[in-house]
Length: 124
Image (cartoon, rainbow, N blue to C red):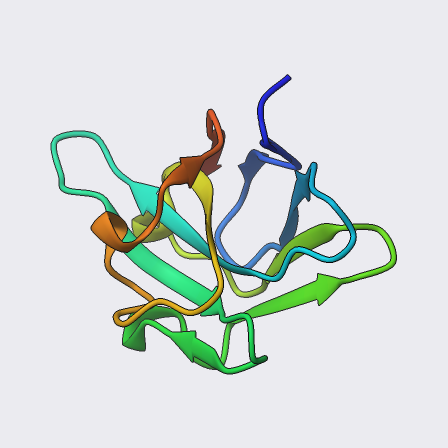
């Protein structure tokens, strides 16, 4: 297994909900900035939500009010609660991490560690 392992993807109808999980394997004293990205077929990878090592949270405008990112330090797991899903949310979702703070939390090049992705499909 790698540093990051995602789970929780699936298929839902529009308006439905899913919760993605990203388990990180790290030493207890490590502080990471972490984020969720997604990549739809034929499109570039885009940042969805990020939680930095100091606790600051950033969301893409397209998901504000629908998605919630959280971090369970005790479980070393990051979550993405996705509500009111839309067909345009269909994509492969990836979690990403980097030690300490990042300058641009929703930019993919800021992160060194990546999971293998979990597919989210929203359709009726």
